[in-house]
Image (cartoon, rainbow, N blue to C red; front, side):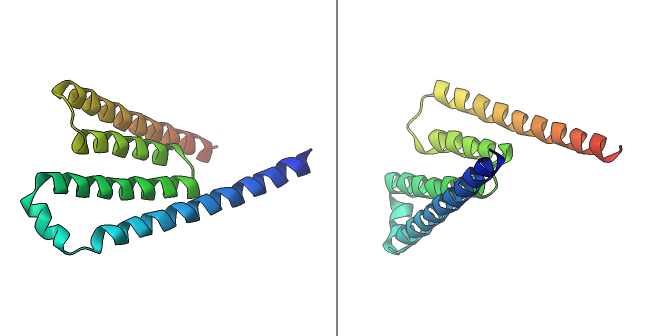
Length: 132
């Protein structure tokens, strides 16, 4: 039974690595497609809608990078960072009401507090186990 469990974990690790490589390829392709047109920078200054589309692409790249980090080293920090970026993307890129903006800000604050609590809890656990 232990051997089967170990084998399944190795397969899962290989699949996670394969998905991480696919995500990396997608992030790189998106980055190159975002910067291939140099007229884009002129349009960014002229039109707000073009700038919003540009920000949306950048947020997709950043979220993809954070997702890739989470796949390579899964822990609560990366999950919380992805959630913070997703909420920020929704708030910055989307057409939102003041109420939705307020809820988004409260959500980001709560996620940051959760991250801080997890760091504090992890530091306390490490210090208590290191002293014995």
